Amino acid sequence: MENWQGAFFIVGVCAIILFILALKQHSHLILNLVYRGVSGTILIFLADQLVMAVGLSVFVGINPGTVLTCTILGFPGVILLFGMKFYGLL
Image 1 (cartoon, rainbow, N blue to C red):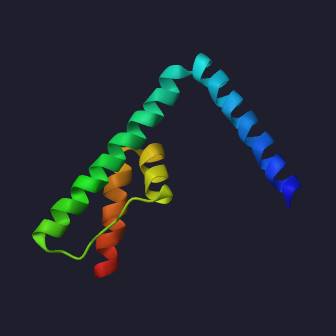
Image 2: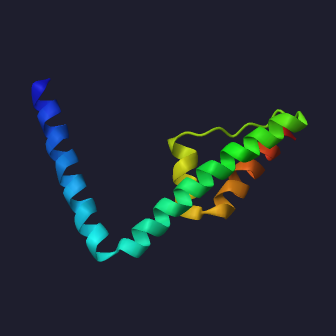
Image 3: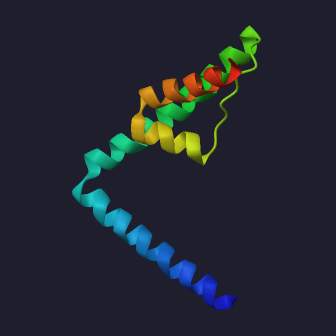
């Protein structure tokens, strides 16, 4: 079992190094992804609060899947998540 922990550590260090190198070369793209992920997550949180205040039982929640959807798709991803949740109620 110790060998797996060492392998995960090495892969993690390599991923961090690659991320730092990519950040140097493509900083505007990576910062754009981070911005979309953070703003989408905040938008999901606020929309969930609004939907709860209205009294609907539609709650998307924040998890790695929803954050990744917001990061890749941006604002349309948030709309897509809530649209899929509303469609599930019909």
